[in-house]
Each structure stands twice: as structure tokens, then as C-alpha cells.
Image (cartoon, rainbow, N blue to C red; front, top):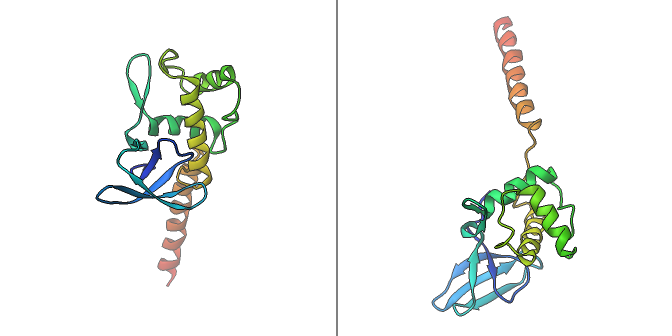
Length: 155
């Protein structure tokens, strides 16, 4: 999962794909509606791959949080709505990331993370690979190799 080109822009809803950098700002395309916008450098622009979440001992990159959410949700949308009550958001996030710092991570931050997760999942930027699928691919390739060997001996 690479989030190097995915940005959040202050005062703009949703996420954006960075297209290019201009002299005075950036050109980005919305992941929600596909509209292209130009943003000047006065706006706060945050690259998702550089965002960290406060935890009790250290900070965890947002990409690791998304990985934990993918594993927790098994590759589907978050089970709690981003507009749920603050208590529900905190309870959900505590299930996914038990070590997060409750004093420095606010419900509004959790709401954004859940919204971003759902957007990235719907655009297939985040992809979940189950533990069951990985070995199945390896065994299938071994079976293919074994079936090819007897055919070449007969010929």
C-alpha cells in the first residue's frame, strides 16, 4: 500500500491524489468525485504516508493503522459509521489500536481516519489479503509444477 501521492487538504472534505506540484501550490484530483483542483501553498496539505498517530509509548504511522483496520475488518468497510457518537468511535478505535493515546487522539481524529479508510478501500487503494489466500496461491503453483513434470517425461 503506497500513500505517497494521497493527500488531505485543510478545509476540503475527502482525500486527493497529488497530480503535480506547481510554482504556487499543487494540482490534485479528488478521490471522492474525481474533480481536479488547484491548491496554493497557504493551505495545509498533509501526505497520508507522513501522518503519525499518538500512542502510549511511541507514534504509529497511519499506514500501520490502516493495516490494522484491514485485518480487523477483514477487508470491508469499517463497522462503525464516521458520524457515530464519540464514545462509539473511541470504543471502535480502542479495539483496533489498543495502545493509542486517548488523551491526544480526539474523536474528530478517529472520525477522519475511519472516513479515509473507507474512501481508500472503496477506491481499491487499500487491499486486504487474507491469511488463507496466501498459502493457497503457493500450493496451486506447486501442483502446477508437479503436473508439468510427468507430461515432459512421457514425451
